[in-house]
Image 1 (spheres, rainbow, N blue to C red):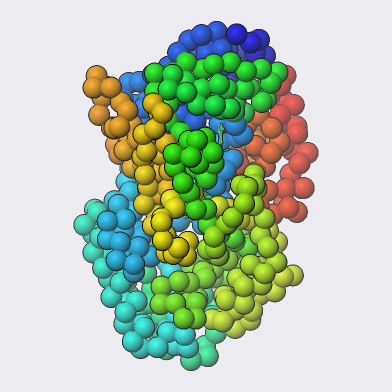
Image 2 (cartoon, rainbow, N blue to C red):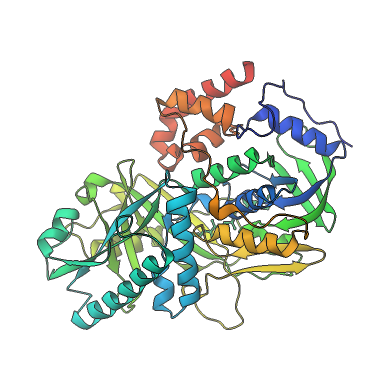
Length: 483
Ligand SMILES: Cc1cc2nc3c(=O)[nH]c(=O)nc-3n(C[C@H](O)[C@H](O)[C@H](O)COP(=O)(O)OP(=O)(O)OC[C@H]3O[C@@H](n4cnc5c(N)ncnc54)[C@H](O)[C@@H]3O)c2cc1C
């Protein structure tokens, strides 16, 4: 047993969704003292968070350990879309597209309507997209529309595809070039307000079912009966955390922890952020087709914070997995030039105010196909007395967790209930930055300045905004320490 730092106990009783330093310290100490749990989840990204909620809502006792903060890894570097799976349809992968459409419906209607809105997308017709290519794209989107309807998402939630005139397209996205513009396909998909917040809200909901959400606790080795863990926020002490079942949900790091039982072929995706004014204040996302590919686009997606996100690249990534991948200059040049093909004015490096990249935890396949075409399917692999769950995407993570827990839950555990659970967070207080930062320390387990600026808020996406908020973040943590 190790000694773990005890913070003053001001936390609410178990059953609350409030997460804070005191609750973390108390729950960690109990586990270090020998308390055991039914299920240990390793990894606090979207998949681990859903696993914790799935297990806890089946009535199992749960601990989740994450070596950094919640959403420390890939889950905060996504394009923040709740996809219906159009790309997969284009590759004939109807199963993955159907799963995406169903999970999008659950996210939009049940779990997180407070975080997801309908986003219009324009595909400009003309130039790169001749009449035959336009007709093919239209047929694919109509098929996706059929999946939307079959999955139960109403047209009021996500309208059906429409062809619009060049004039209407330019009204929705004034920066669109009118060179050769014949009109556009207008279709809709789900936009997540923030991916890190989705992870947080799932984790807080799991906490309300009694799950112990333990950030800054690293799993050094996994065993069939638990894991050797270390508290990297406290005194650095380690202990054996006892669990009847272990789920490895460490995303792109899962290969290492699975001891080679799972092989991944990570793919890097990069995004840029530019002020909306640089692209004519678009109200719709714009898809710019990539030359020579009928199914791949670079998109410019308007966000609620006055920025437009330009993405995305998709290239195999070799070598050790970095904590925070960086956007390379050639990726930046590629994204700017690609979106510039359909715009009046090509944005330049000087327009870019932020950039971020992530690594997709794609399952390796035995052929040498490009990562852009690798399946976004997920896998639940049993090995060495534990299970690894990996692959998939943000949109399908709830289903991934269901499959993982179905595999390990004892016969006396309840059935999966997560498709019926509304996530915590819908009633989060609004208000100025100081109020939100304070709430993050009392209810959202923010323990550091980085937690506040890079994950509870996303000010860190734009370095200038981050710098401006540093003092406020330090003040919020100082207040929390003396409360
Ligand atoms: C650029 C990009 C864009 C994307 N866009 C979309 C999109 O728009 N829509 C969509 O649905 N999907 C999207 N995806 C896919 C989606 O983001 C990922 O599939 C998903 O976030 C992976 O979640 P995860 O929980 O498996 O991994 P992660 O989020 O990486 O979580 C794994 C966690 O495990 C932790 N960990 C690692 N090792 C240990 C250890 N030893 N002990 C404790 N903790 C550990 C890490 O710190 C990390 O927090 C995108 C992916 C990328 C890269």
